[in-house]
Image (cartoon, rainbow, N blue to C red):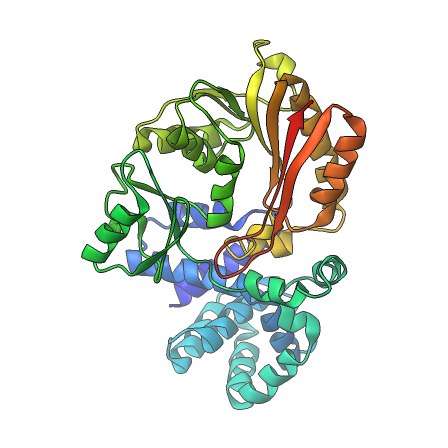
Length: 416
């Protein structure tokens, strides 16, 4: 266990340095080739769980060790161990013993006694310490204070529910490939496989309990894809018809690209600025048996890739804070900074402005984010409409995270 504890603490350190959880976890698993499947699962749980509950864990740690330790790695190790004691079935004595063993390798072992004392003190005072953490608004929110305040200002009635959803485990939602069958057909396949699920509408099916994707009936053959219900709205909003020329401007990992191709026989161009991420689009389309023109390109610089032929539909899924999907990527809460939004706003505006001239007269562009902050969404839209008098807002929607879906913003525009 101490090996997994230490790896999870290392991952927390990498995230503090600015690496994403996805990248940090993948790198750790590449380096630790000897890990068993069970150990890989445990490492993922400790990494995700510690970040999901980081606010409460930090508060608890300060009750046990009032001053920050001179070795940051010891703090991370204690945070992981506290997560294990609160949220896993690991035997408490084993958690403490293995944390002490890990501490022996830090600072020549001089903090072994402190680690042992702090964790045993938590066991004795658990209810008291957790009650105090629950009474602290920021600690119990498990989000940075600035994030909480922005949500409170933007959503005075829903902010607490949004925070709770952001701390929850996300559901596993599937998109049924309507080229291969109906939602009813696939529900029957799931039932035959002993997997309980419900239809959410259109092409979405949500499982009662998550499973590995390879266990899903027909997954390898393209019968379904994993995609949040909120993300599935984009393709339907674009009102696609056979023969349309369509641009997916920031396509990776390809969920929306595949969905659009499933809905209609369109001529699809899918861009992404990152070759590695574009490879994921290719893999997803290959599994689905679909084709598109894939281009490694910057959507904000069409002069480097556009052939001059207008598009009937454009999906502008612009770079954003990803605040609406924080429950799937809990590192987002701790990586984001208040100052990020100015730079993101400039990127969003530049991309939307660059793509608009590529749209045919009468065509539609969908501005989309997976953010819940107004400065990336409705405020961006209002500014865009002021800059482009030929743009007509057809509809817009802000989805907030809930049991059914993650947080997304959509604004459908038509060129007049």
